Length: 338
Length: 277
Image 1 (cartoon, rainbow over the protein chains, first blue to last red):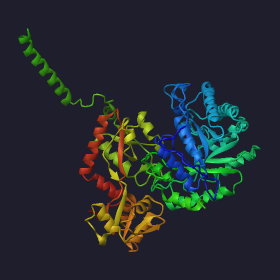
Image 2 (tube, rainbow over the protein chains, first blue to last red):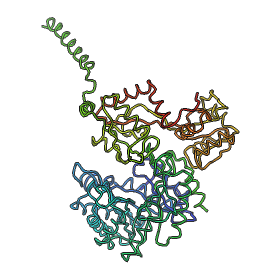
Image 3 (cartoon, rainbow over the protein chains, first blue to last red):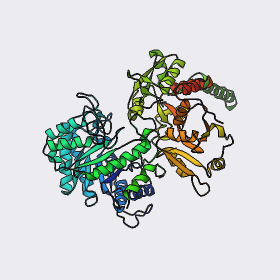
Image 4 (cartoon, rainbow over the protein chains, first blue to last red):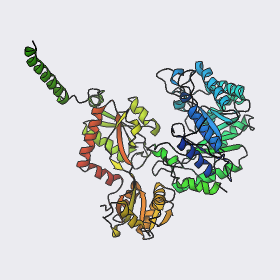
């Protein structure tokens, strides 16, 4: 693909003191090629090797059988050229594959093969350039399961269908499952299922045969990075509890990848910390994970939004929409770049 | 025939013109209104969506009851409309969906104007600006700061206190350039930066308006607001299908501003013990 608006330039490699550092980019709605390139340059310059990026099925295949890969190609070309390892999150159901009054996280079993075909097409197209895909996002939340009651059995079936299509397209592809939302939802809650319970239910349903690594969302809320894991607390080390579940089920060989997480430094949100604490906890998290042999990457939320969210969500980012690096960016860069 | 038709044509045109005027001024300015305002009046309840996890604007007390500036403001708006407010506490991410789905009548939750949403929602005028403030000690008032040059003059060669890693810290780094040089003193919290200013360790400070107002509550008459360096105006959103409700909320805010209620809310939940130009 020609990149006349934003030439690729010479290929790069990421220089970092910690090869597990990653950051979730938000390029889905970024239109301008130059901004996509600048985002990915800045990620590399921060010393992050990994990115997670969302590739919505609904954007790529807005009509059944009619696929438009231009934007996805642009992102992948620039990311790979910057030397970044891309973890592709796949989801978002197009209108044609769901009922008219449903939201874009609604997918019924009748349309699992359609999603699997898209997964296969994606994996095939980016063979040799994208080595990791995440199937769905936070299926333990009703909001991410079409506003229906969450269903680990049904998700496992979806995972199986997608896994088989992905492996058929490229046996080397690594399929990540879960990306479970950390939640303390009580049993029977209408909106969510506790992530530890959900993982157990997935494994009981036979999910272990259909993923190569577990994607985990590790938010710290108000706790320091080294705050001890506790089933009744959402903190960064909750990831260790999910690891224990894998071990408990004889799946210790399956690595974990943190594909979202981190801290928020909004001045007033009750789940936020001070900016200085956010910097301290973030560096601590990257350093701790460097010692976890079962954790392959720590990809925190989020590098930059295309426009201001106008809310506390802006206080998760490392760089402003105008590409001004926040102090957290500069501190991570100071830590990570040799 | 043409001669005879002309007076009738004039009558017809005049009639049409009058009919248009009648439609325009007959109390039907919102032909596409969904009747939300009337339903609220019949129900006697204004359903207010908010995420009560942002003190001092909205949070839950020990009994789980929502309290704060925005809770009280919603109650004032409801009272102005002759109804009572019902606070519906939702996760922030679900607020606009709840409004779209008709689960709430308005949302108020530190929202800022979002041009991308203006096909679906109508925004009120701002009721509070939470942007970054440039402040000095009250004893070093400088009421003449209006332009960039004035800000540069105030900053140049001085010591600027900020909270490390905050938006104020970033703003301080951005303003420092070839034409203006100063020392940035970074503190672990906005409060400590403001304490340093009050104690004379720094010449100016940059902090968000809420932190400045809250500091002033415990340190009355210590600070002077020079100017806003950035703006973060908070607004109320209603569905674009309900323009009459939006107009009623705007009118209520206007009245509350003129009658001093907004100032009193700020004094109650933040502080007014500050001098400003």
